[in-house]
Length: 526
Image (cartoon, rainbow, N blue to C red; front, side, top):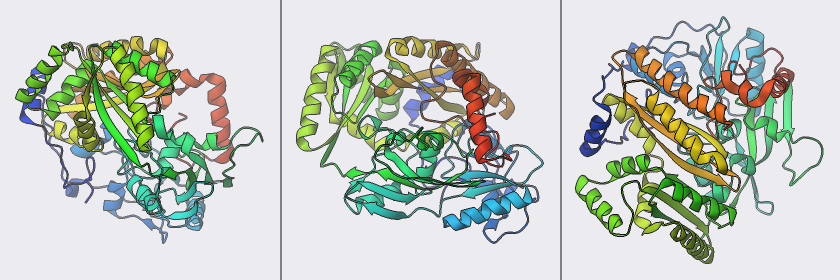
Protein backbone atom coordinates (compact mmCIF):
# COMPACT_ATOMS: atom_id res chain seq x y z
CA UNK A 1 0.00 0.00 0.00
CA UNK A 2 1.28 3.46 -0.86
CA UNK A 3 2.36 5.64 2.06
CA UNK A 4 -0.13 8.47 2.67
CA UNK A 5 2.30 10.91 4.30
CA UNK A 6 5.60 10.20 2.58
CA UNK A 7 7.23 8.57 -0.41
CA UNK A 8 6.43 5.18 -1.93
CA UNK A 9 5.20 1.95 -0.42
CA UNK A 10 4.66 1.50 3.32
CA UNK A 11 6.54 -1.81 3.16
CA UNK A 12 9.71 -0.18 1.79
CA UNK A 13 12.16 1.76 3.92
CA UNK A 14 15.61 3.19 3.32
CA UNK A 15 17.12 2.74 6.76
CA UNK A 16 19.78 5.23 7.73
CA UNK A 17 22.90 3.21 8.71
CA UNK A 18 24.26 3.99 12.15
CA UNK A 19 27.54 5.23 10.74
CA UNK A 20 25.63 7.55 8.38
CA UNK A 21 23.53 8.82 11.30
CA UNK A 22 26.69 9.51 13.28
CA UNK A 23 28.16 11.31 10.25
CA UNK A 24 25.11 13.63 10.03
CA UNK A 25 25.00 14.21 13.76
CA UNK A 26 28.62 15.35 13.61
CA UNK A 27 27.97 17.64 10.63
CA UNK A 28 24.59 19.08 11.67
CA UNK A 29 23.89 18.24 15.28
CA UNK A 30 20.74 16.45 16.38
CA UNK A 31 17.41 17.87 15.24
CA UNK A 32 13.99 18.00 16.88
CA UNK A 33 11.54 15.29 15.97
CA UNK A 34 8.03 16.51 15.19
CA UNK A 35 5.06 14.40 16.22
CA UNK A 36 3.53 12.64 13.21
CA UNK A 37 -0.26 12.74 13.10
CA UNK A 38 -2.19 9.57 12.33
CA UNK A 39 -4.34 9.32 9.23
CA UNK A 40 -7.50 9.03 11.32
CA UNK A 41 -6.72 12.42 12.90
CA UNK A 42 -7.04 14.27 9.59
CA UNK A 43 -10.53 15.68 9.02
CA UNK A 44 -11.19 17.54 5.74
CA UNK A 45 -14.04 20.08 5.71
CA UNK A 46 -17.38 19.13 4.17
CA UNK A 47 -17.14 18.89 0.39
CA UNK A 48 -18.55 21.81 -1.60
CA UNK A 49 -19.06 19.72 -4.75
CA UNK A 50 -22.45 18.33 -5.78
CA UNK A 51 -22.74 14.64 -6.61
CA UNK A 52 -21.40 13.19 -9.85
CA UNK A 53 -21.15 9.53 -10.75
CA UNK A 54 -17.37 9.80 -11.38
CA UNK A 55 -16.53 11.97 -8.37
CA UNK A 56 -15.63 10.64 -4.95
CA UNK A 57 -16.15 13.00 -2.03
CA UNK A 58 -14.83 10.47 0.46
CA UNK A 59 -12.43 11.67 3.15
CA UNK A 60 -9.64 9.20 2.35
CA UNK A 61 -9.55 9.89 -1.39
CA UNK A 62 -9.43 13.64 -0.77
CA UNK A 63 -6.47 13.24 1.61
CA UNK A 64 -4.59 10.83 -0.67
CA UNK A 65 -5.02 13.13 -3.69
CA UNK A 66 -4.59 16.47 -1.93
CA UNK A 67 -0.85 17.06 -1.87
CA UNK A 68 2.28 16.31 -3.87
CA UNK A 69 5.79 15.39 -2.75
CA UNK A 70 7.40 18.77 -2.02
CA UNK A 71 9.03 19.42 1.33
CA UNK A 72 6.09 21.61 2.46
CA UNK A 73 3.80 18.72 1.50
CA UNK A 74 5.82 16.39 3.74
CA UNK A 75 5.61 18.83 6.66
CA UNK A 76 1.87 19.31 6.10
CA UNK A 77 1.05 15.61 5.99
CA UNK A 78 3.38 14.60 8.81
CA UNK A 79 2.16 17.30 11.20
CA UNK A 80 -1.49 17.51 10.19
CA UNK A 81 -1.26 21.14 9.03
CA UNK A 82 -2.60 20.18 5.62
CA UNK A 83 -4.55 23.30 4.75
CA UNK A 84 -6.69 23.16 1.60
CA UNK A 85 -7.77 19.77 0.25
CA UNK A 86 -9.76 19.03 -2.92
CA UNK A 87 -13.52 18.78 -2.46
CA UNK A 88 -13.63 15.65 -4.59
CA UNK A 89 -11.54 13.30 -6.69
CA UNK A 90 -12.55 11.96 -10.11
CA UNK A 91 -11.23 8.80 -11.78
CA UNK A 92 -12.12 8.87 -15.49
CA UNK A 93 -11.26 5.92 -17.71
CA UNK A 94 -11.95 7.48 -21.13
CA UNK A 95 -11.59 10.82 -22.88
CA UNK A 96 -15.39 11.08 -22.99
CA UNK A 97 -15.50 10.88 -19.21
CA UNK A 98 -12.81 13.58 -18.96
CA UNK A 99 -14.96 15.82 -21.20
CA UNK A 100 -18.00 15.10 -19.02
CA UNK A 101 -16.04 16.04 -15.89
CA UNK A 102 -14.83 19.31 -17.42
CA UNK A 103 -18.45 20.18 -18.29
CA UNK A 104 -19.50 19.31 -14.75
CA UNK A 105 -16.72 21.49 -13.27
CA UNK A 106 -17.74 24.37 -15.53
CA UNK A 107 -21.41 24.05 -14.45
CA UNK A 108 -20.66 24.03 -10.72
CA UNK A 109 -17.87 26.64 -10.88
CA UNK A 110 -15.14 24.27 -9.75
CA UNK A 111 -11.39 24.54 -10.24
CA UNK A 112 -9.77 21.45 -11.78
CA UNK A 113 -6.36 20.03 -10.90
CA UNK A 114 -5.12 17.38 -13.38
CA UNK A 115 -3.23 14.72 -11.43
CA UNK A 116 -0.99 11.87 -12.50
CA UNK A 117 1.19 10.24 -9.88
CA UNK A 118 1.15 13.21 -7.51
CA UNK A 119 4.95 13.39 -7.45
CA UNK A 120 5.37 17.15 -7.97
CA UNK A 121 8.09 18.63 -5.74
CA UNK A 122 7.17 22.26 -6.51
CA UNK A 123 3.53 22.44 -5.40
CA UNK A 124 2.23 21.55 -8.85
CA UNK A 125 -0.87 19.60 -7.74
CA UNK A 126 -1.89 21.44 -4.56
CA UNK A 127 -5.26 23.22 -4.27
CA UNK A 128 -5.17 26.97 -3.68
CA UNK A 129 -7.21 28.80 -1.07
CA UNK A 130 -10.41 30.17 -2.58
CA UNK A 131 -14.21 30.27 -2.54
CA UNK A 132 -14.60 27.86 -5.47
CA UNK A 133 -14.73 24.08 -4.94
CA UNK A 134 -11.76 22.07 -6.18
CA UNK A 135 -11.86 18.86 -8.20
CA UNK A 136 -8.73 16.71 -8.40
CA UNK A 137 -8.99 14.87 -11.70
CA UNK A 138 -6.85 11.75 -11.43
CA UNK A 139 -5.79 10.11 -14.69
CA UNK A 140 -4.43 6.97 -12.99
CA UNK A 141 -7.02 4.69 -14.65
CA UNK A 142 -6.09 5.86 -18.16
CA UNK A 143 -2.93 3.78 -18.42
CA UNK A 144 -3.28 1.41 -21.37
CA UNK A 145 -1.22 1.07 -24.53
CA UNK A 146 -3.72 2.14 -27.21
CA UNK A 147 -1.69 1.75 -30.39
CA UNK A 148 1.71 0.45 -31.48
CA UNK A 149 3.18 1.57 -34.82
CA UNK A 150 6.22 -0.66 -35.22
CA UNK A 151 7.15 0.80 -38.62
CA UNK A 152 7.15 4.35 -37.29
CA UNK A 153 8.41 3.31 -33.82
CA UNK A 154 5.50 5.16 -32.21
CA UNK A 155 3.39 4.10 -29.23
CA UNK A 156 0.17 5.73 -28.02
CA UNK A 157 -0.70 5.56 -24.32
CA UNK A 158 -3.31 6.89 -21.97
CA UNK A 159 -1.60 9.76 -20.16
CA UNK A 160 -2.00 8.27 -16.68
CA UNK A 161 0.37 5.38 -17.31
CA UNK A 162 3.12 5.13 -14.69
CA UNK A 163 6.71 4.48 -15.63
CA UNK A 164 6.84 0.74 -14.75
CA UNK A 165 3.51 0.05 -16.47
CA UNK A 166 4.61 1.90 -19.59
CA UNK A 167 7.88 -0.01 -19.79
CA UNK A 168 6.20 -3.36 -19.10
CA UNK A 169 3.72 -2.87 -21.94
CA UNK A 170 6.41 -1.79 -24.39
CA UNK A 171 8.86 -4.51 -23.41
CA UNK A 172 6.23 -7.12 -24.10
CA UNK A 173 6.78 -6.18 -27.76
CA UNK A 174 10.55 -5.74 -27.46
CA UNK A 175 10.62 -1.92 -27.13
CA UNK A 176 11.45 0.70 -24.53
CA UNK A 177 10.95 4.43 -23.96
CA UNK A 178 14.02 4.73 -21.74
CA UNK A 179 12.67 7.61 -19.64
CA UNK A 180 13.78 7.08 -16.04
CA UNK A 181 13.30 10.08 -13.73
CA UNK A 182 13.97 9.39 -10.05
CA UNK A 183 10.18 9.36 -9.56
CA UNK A 184 9.87 6.67 -12.28
CA UNK A 185 7.94 4.19 -10.12
CA UNK A 186 5.05 6.62 -9.48
CA UNK A 187 5.17 9.50 -11.97
CA UNK A 188 3.16 9.31 -15.19
CA UNK A 189 3.62 9.98 -18.86
CA UNK A 190 1.21 12.93 -18.75
CA UNK A 191 3.06 14.38 -15.79
CA UNK A 192 6.40 14.03 -17.57
CA UNK A 193 5.02 15.99 -20.53
CA UNK A 194 3.32 18.64 -18.40
CA UNK A 195 6.56 19.37 -16.50
CA UNK A 196 9.18 18.84 -19.27
CA UNK A 197 10.71 15.93 -17.41
CA UNK A 198 14.20 14.48 -17.89
CA UNK A 199 15.09 10.86 -17.25
CA UNK A 200 18.38 9.91 -15.62
CA UNK A 201 19.61 8.56 -18.96
CA UNK A 202 18.47 11.52 -21.05
CA UNK A 203 21.92 11.77 -22.64
CA UNK A 204 21.15 8.60 -24.59
CA UNK A 205 17.36 8.47 -24.76
CA UNK A 206 16.53 12.19 -24.82
CA UNK A 207 14.36 14.42 -22.65
CA UNK A 208 10.59 14.04 -22.76
CA UNK A 209 10.32 16.77 -25.44
CA UNK A 210 12.45 14.53 -27.68
CA UNK A 211 10.19 11.52 -26.98
CA UNK A 212 6.75 13.21 -27.08
CA UNK A 213 5.53 13.21 -30.67
CA UNK A 214 1.84 14.08 -30.37
CA UNK A 215 -1.41 13.29 -28.62
CA UNK A 216 -4.67 14.76 -27.37
CA UNK A 217 -5.43 17.55 -24.91
CA UNK A 218 -8.91 18.44 -23.69
CA UNK A 219 -9.10 22.16 -22.95
CA UNK A 220 -12.13 23.96 -21.45
CA UNK A 221 -12.90 25.36 -24.93
CA UNK A 222 -12.48 22.11 -26.84
CA UNK A 223 -10.04 19.37 -27.84
CA UNK A 224 -6.53 20.02 -29.13
CA UNK A 225 -5.22 17.33 -31.45
CA UNK A 226 -1.47 17.01 -32.02
CA UNK A 227 -0.68 14.68 -34.96
CA UNK A 228 2.71 12.90 -34.68
CA UNK A 229 4.28 14.46 -37.77
CA UNK A 230 7.93 13.51 -38.28
CA UNK A 231 8.48 17.25 -38.93
CA UNK A 232 6.41 20.27 -39.93
CA UNK A 233 6.97 23.89 -40.93
CA UNK A 234 3.31 24.82 -40.42
CA UNK A 235 3.96 27.54 -37.90
CA UNK A 236 5.03 27.10 -34.26
CA UNK A 237 4.91 23.54 -32.95
CA UNK A 238 1.86 23.31 -30.67
CA UNK A 239 3.40 20.37 -28.84
CA UNK A 240 5.71 22.88 -27.18
CA UNK A 241 2.75 24.74 -25.74
CA UNK A 242 1.65 21.53 -24.03
CA UNK A 243 5.16 20.61 -22.86
CA UNK A 244 5.67 22.31 -19.52
CA UNK A 245 2.08 23.63 -19.39
CA UNK A 246 1.51 22.11 -15.91
CA UNK A 247 -2.22 21.62 -16.40
CA UNK A 248 -2.95 25.28 -17.14
CA UNK A 249 -4.19 24.67 -20.69
CA UNK A 250 -6.19 21.50 -20.18
CA UNK A 251 -5.84 17.78 -19.59
CA UNK A 252 -3.51 15.57 -21.59
CA UNK A 253 -5.58 12.46 -22.23
CA UNK A 254 -3.27 10.50 -24.55
CA UNK A 255 0.28 10.81 -25.76
CA UNK A 256 2.21 9.44 -28.72
CA UNK A 257 5.83 8.73 -27.88
CA UNK A 258 8.89 7.61 -29.79
CA UNK A 259 10.06 4.15 -28.76
CA UNK A 260 13.14 2.12 -29.64
CA UNK A 261 14.09 -1.55 -29.48
CA UNK A 262 15.24 -2.80 -26.08
CA UNK A 263 19.05 -2.46 -26.12
CA UNK A 264 21.14 -5.60 -26.30
CA UNK A 265 23.49 -4.42 -23.57
CA UNK A 266 23.72 -1.76 -20.90
CA UNK A 267 26.66 -1.11 -18.58
CA UNK A 268 27.15 1.27 -15.64
CA UNK A 269 30.56 1.97 -14.14
CA UNK A 270 32.40 4.45 -11.96
CA UNK A 271 35.32 6.87 -12.22
CA UNK A 272 36.86 8.94 -9.43
CA UNK A 273 38.49 12.32 -10.18
CA UNK A 274 40.94 14.20 -7.94
CA UNK A 275 38.71 17.31 -8.13
CA UNK A 276 35.20 18.18 -9.25
CA UNK A 277 36.54 20.71 -11.74
CA UNK A 278 38.63 18.01 -13.43
CA UNK A 279 35.52 15.87 -13.70
CA UNK A 280 33.53 18.72 -15.24
CA UNK A 281 36.17 19.18 -17.93
CA UNK A 282 36.00 15.46 -18.70
CA UNK A 283 32.19 15.64 -18.97
CA UNK A 284 32.38 18.59 -21.34
CA UNK A 285 34.91 16.88 -23.56
CA UNK A 286 32.95 13.62 -23.64
CA UNK A 287 29.67 15.25 -24.66
CA UNK A 288 31.22 17.68 -27.13
CA UNK A 289 33.07 14.84 -28.83
CA UNK A 290 29.80 12.92 -29.15
CA UNK A 291 30.83 9.81 -27.21
CA UNK A 292 27.66 7.65 -27.35
CA UNK A 293 26.93 7.28 -23.64
CA UNK A 294 23.45 7.20 -22.12
CA UNK A 295 24.34 8.83 -18.78
CA UNK A 296 26.97 10.99 -17.08
CA UNK A 297 26.47 11.93 -13.41
CA UNK A 298 29.29 13.68 -11.54
CA UNK A 299 29.03 14.22 -7.77
CA UNK A 300 31.01 16.93 -6.02
CA UNK A 301 33.25 15.97 -3.06
CA UNK A 302 30.49 16.54 -0.48
CA UNK A 303 28.01 14.35 -2.32
CA UNK A 304 30.72 11.75 -2.94
CA UNK A 305 31.46 11.61 0.81
CA UNK A 306 27.75 11.32 1.59
CA UNK A 307 27.27 8.50 -0.93
CA UNK A 308 30.20 6.60 0.52
CA UNK A 309 28.89 7.15 4.05
CA UNK A 310 25.53 5.67 3.07
CA UNK A 311 26.87 2.78 1.00
CA UNK A 312 30.00 1.66 2.89
CA UNK A 313 30.89 0.85 6.47
CA UNK A 314 33.67 3.02 7.98
CA UNK A 315 36.18 0.17 7.64
CA UNK A 316 35.41 -0.51 3.96
CA UNK A 317 35.38 3.22 3.25
CA UNK A 318 38.85 3.63 4.76
CA UNK A 319 40.20 0.78 2.65
CA UNK A 320 38.61 2.25 -0.47
CA UNK A 321 40.08 5.69 0.21
CA UNK A 322 43.52 4.22 0.92
CA UNK A 323 43.40 2.40 -2.42
CA UNK A 324 42.47 5.62 -4.24
CA UNK A 325 45.16 7.58 -2.40
CA UNK A 326 47.78 5.12 -3.68
CA UNK A 327 46.52 5.93 -7.19
CA UNK A 328 46.87 9.67 -6.66
CA UNK A 329 43.27 10.58 -5.77
CA UNK A 330 43.03 12.37 -2.43
CA UNK A 331 40.42 13.82 -0.10
CA UNK A 332 38.51 16.10 -2.50
CA UNK A 333 37.61 13.31 -4.87
CA UNK A 334 34.51 13.34 -7.07
CA UNK A 335 32.61 10.27 -8.24
CA UNK A 336 31.34 9.96 -11.81
CA UNK A 337 28.81 7.30 -12.83
CA UNK A 338 28.67 6.55 -16.55
CA UNK A 339 26.35 4.35 -18.58
CA UNK A 340 26.54 3.00 -22.11
CA UNK A 341 23.56 1.48 -23.88
CA UNK A 342 23.22 -0.28 -27.24
CA UNK A 343 24.83 -3.17 -29.07
CA UNK A 344 27.84 -4.85 -27.43
CA UNK A 345 30.11 -3.17 -29.99
CA UNK A 346 28.60 0.28 -29.30
CA UNK A 347 29.00 -0.21 -25.56
CA UNK A 348 32.58 -1.36 -25.98
CA UNK A 349 33.48 1.65 -28.14
CA UNK A 350 31.77 4.11 -25.78
CA UNK A 351 33.65 2.66 -22.82
CA UNK A 352 36.94 2.86 -24.65
CA UNK A 353 36.44 6.46 -25.83
CA UNK A 354 35.25 7.72 -22.46
CA UNK A 355 38.03 5.90 -20.60
CA UNK A 356 40.68 7.68 -22.66
CA UNK A 357 39.12 11.07 -21.93
CA UNK A 358 38.65 10.58 -18.17
CA UNK A 359 42.20 9.33 -17.76
CA UNK A 360 43.40 12.43 -19.56
CA UNK A 361 41.80 14.48 -16.77
CA UNK A 362 43.24 12.42 -13.92
CA UNK A 363 40.26 10.11 -13.50
CA UNK A 364 40.68 6.63 -12.00
CA UNK A 365 38.31 3.97 -13.35
CA UNK A 366 36.96 1.96 -10.40
CA UNK A 367 34.88 -0.53 -12.37
CA UNK A 368 31.27 -1.66 -12.46
CA UNK A 369 30.66 -2.25 -8.74
CA UNK A 370 30.03 1.47 -8.18
CA UNK A 371 27.77 1.59 -11.23
CA UNK A 372 25.75 -1.43 -10.15
CA UNK A 373 25.36 -0.04 -6.63
CA UNK A 374 24.10 3.30 -7.97
CA UNK A 375 21.70 1.55 -10.35
CA UNK A 376 20.35 -0.62 -7.55
CA UNK A 377 19.54 2.49 -5.44
CA UNK A 378 18.43 4.84 -8.23
CA UNK A 379 14.73 4.77 -7.34
CA UNK A 380 15.13 4.17 -3.60
CA UNK A 381 16.79 7.45 -2.61
CA UNK A 382 13.47 9.35 -2.20
CA UNK A 383 12.68 7.00 0.70
CA UNK A 384 15.66 8.45 2.55
CA UNK A 385 13.81 11.72 3.14
CA UNK A 386 11.31 9.94 5.42
CA UNK A 387 14.07 8.20 7.38
CA UNK A 388 15.89 11.50 7.85
CA UNK A 389 12.69 13.18 9.01
CA UNK A 390 12.15 10.47 11.62
CA UNK A 391 15.70 11.08 12.91
CA UNK A 392 15.22 14.85 13.22
CA UNK A 393 16.72 16.03 9.93
CA UNK A 394 15.27 17.54 6.75
CA UNK A 395 16.44 17.30 3.16
CA UNK A 396 15.32 18.77 -0.13
CA UNK A 397 16.64 19.36 -3.63
CA UNK A 398 16.65 22.19 -6.14
CA UNK A 399 18.03 22.14 -9.66
CA UNK A 400 18.98 24.39 -12.54
CA UNK A 401 20.95 24.35 -15.79
CA UNK A 402 23.48 26.73 -17.25
CA UNK A 403 26.31 26.94 -19.77
CA UNK A 404 29.68 25.23 -19.38
CA UNK A 405 31.43 28.58 -18.93
CA UNK A 406 29.28 29.41 -15.90
CA UNK A 407 28.64 25.91 -14.53
CA UNK A 408 31.37 25.72 -11.86
CA UNK A 409 30.96 29.38 -10.72
CA UNK A 410 27.19 28.92 -10.40
CA UNK A 411 27.64 25.70 -8.42
CA UNK A 412 30.10 27.36 -6.04
CA UNK A 413 27.84 30.39 -5.55
CA UNK A 414 24.74 28.28 -4.83
CA UNK A 415 26.59 26.00 -2.40
CA UNK A 416 27.95 29.02 -0.51
CA UNK A 417 24.50 30.64 -0.43
CA UNK A 418 22.92 27.45 0.94
CA UNK A 419 25.59 27.00 3.61
CA UNK A 420 25.17 30.59 4.83
CA UNK A 421 21.39 30.87 4.47
CA UNK A 422 20.56 29.91 8.07
CA UNK A 423 23.23 31.94 9.82
CA UNK A 424 24.70 29.96 12.70
CA UNK A 425 22.47 26.97 11.94
CA UNK A 426 24.56 24.44 10.03
CA UNK A 427 23.61 23.21 6.55
CA UNK A 428 25.14 20.39 4.52
CA UNK A 429 24.92 21.24 0.80
CA UNK A 430 26.11 19.21 -2.17
CA UNK A 431 25.67 19.07 -5.94
CA UNK A 432 25.99 16.80 -8.92
CA UNK A 433 26.15 17.64 -12.61
CA UNK A 434 23.99 15.54 -14.89
CA UNK A 435 21.86 15.79 -18.05
CA UNK A 436 24.82 17.08 -20.01
CA UNK A 437 24.62 18.86 -23.36
CA UNK A 438 27.24 20.23 -25.75
CA UNK A 439 26.47 23.75 -24.47
CA UNK A 440 26.07 23.09 -20.73
CA UNK A 441 24.62 20.84 -18.05
CA UNK A 442 22.12 20.59 -15.23
CA UNK A 443 23.14 21.17 -11.62
CA UNK A 444 21.20 19.23 -8.99
CA UNK A 445 21.63 20.48 -5.42
CA UNK A 446 20.77 18.56 -2.26
CA UNK A 447 20.72 20.28 1.12
CA UNK A 448 20.23 18.92 4.63
CA UNK A 449 19.39 20.79 7.82
CA UNK A 450 17.95 20.15 11.26
CA UNK A 451 14.25 20.18 12.01
CA UNK A 452 13.33 23.11 14.23
CA UNK A 453 11.27 22.79 17.41
CA UNK A 454 8.13 23.90 15.55
CA UNK A 455 6.93 22.88 12.04
CA UNK A 456 6.47 26.52 11.04
CA UNK A 457 10.07 27.25 12.00
CA UNK A 458 11.19 24.21 10.00
CA UNK A 459 9.32 25.55 6.96
CA UNK A 460 10.90 28.96 7.44
CA UNK A 461 14.34 27.35 7.32
CA UNK A 462 13.35 25.60 4.09
CA UNK A 463 12.06 28.86 2.56
CA UNK A 464 15.27 30.68 3.36
CA UNK A 465 17.35 27.93 1.79
CA UNK A 466 15.27 27.75 -1.38
CA UNK A 467 15.19 31.54 -1.73
CA UNK A 468 18.97 31.73 -1.37
CA UNK A 469 19.48 29.22 -4.18
CA UNK A 470 16.89 30.80 -6.49
CA UNK A 471 18.46 34.23 -6.04
CA UNK A 472 21.78 32.87 -7.31
CA UNK A 473 20.05 31.18 -10.26
CA UNK A 474 18.41 34.42 -11.33
CA UNK A 475 21.39 36.66 -10.63
CA UNK A 476 23.68 34.44 -12.71
CA UNK A 477 21.23 33.88 -15.57
CA UNK A 478 20.67 30.17 -14.93
CA UNK A 479 17.23 28.65 -15.44
CA UNK A 480 14.78 28.36 -12.54
CA UNK A 481 14.40 24.65 -13.17
CA UNK A 482 15.82 22.05 -15.52
CA UNK A 483 13.25 19.30 -14.99
CA UNK A 484 11.12 19.77 -11.85
CA UNK A 485 8.75 22.35 -13.30
CA UNK A 486 7.50 25.61 -11.80
CA UNK A 487 4.35 24.67 -9.86
CA UNK A 488 3.28 27.24 -7.27
CA UNK A 489 6.63 27.37 -5.45
CA UNK A 490 8.55 28.99 -8.31
CA UNK A 491 5.66 30.76 -10.09
CA UNK A 492 6.41 34.18 -8.53
CA UNK A 493 9.89 34.10 -10.07
CA UNK A 494 8.91 33.13 -13.62
CA UNK A 495 8.70 36.71 -14.89
CA UNK A 496 12.42 37.11 -14.09
CA UNK A 497 13.24 34.30 -16.52
CA UNK A 498 10.61 34.86 -19.23
CA UNK A 499 10.44 38.66 -19.09
CA UNK A 500 7.24 40.70 -19.27
CA UNK A 501 6.63 39.98 -22.93
CA UNK A 502 7.19 36.25 -22.56
CA UNK A 503 5.02 36.05 -19.45
CA UNK A 504 2.24 38.01 -21.18
CA UNK A 505 2.36 35.56 -24.10
CA UNK A 506 1.98 32.61 -21.71
CA UNK A 507 -0.93 34.34 -19.98
CA UNK A 508 -2.63 34.98 -23.34
CA UNK A 509 -2.26 31.33 -24.37
CA UNK A 510 -3.72 30.17 -21.05
CA UNK A 511 -6.60 32.64 -21.40
CA UNK A 512 -7.37 31.33 -24.89
CA UNK A 513 -7.53 27.68 -23.79
CA UNK A 514 -9.12 28.41 -20.40
CA UNK A 515 -11.06 31.70 -20.42
CA UNK A 516 -12.41 31.37 -16.87
CA UNK A 517 -9.16 30.20 -15.28
CA UNK A 518 -10.58 26.91 -14.02
CA UNK A 519 -7.48 24.81 -14.81
CA UNK A 520 -4.90 24.36 -12.03
CA UNK A 521 -4.91 28.00 -10.86
CA UNK A 522 -1.83 29.40 -9.15
CA UNK A 523 0.60 27.12 -10.98
CA UNK A 524 3.22 28.13 -13.55
CA UNK A 525 1.74 31.61 -14.18
CA UNK A 526 1.06 33.44 -10.89
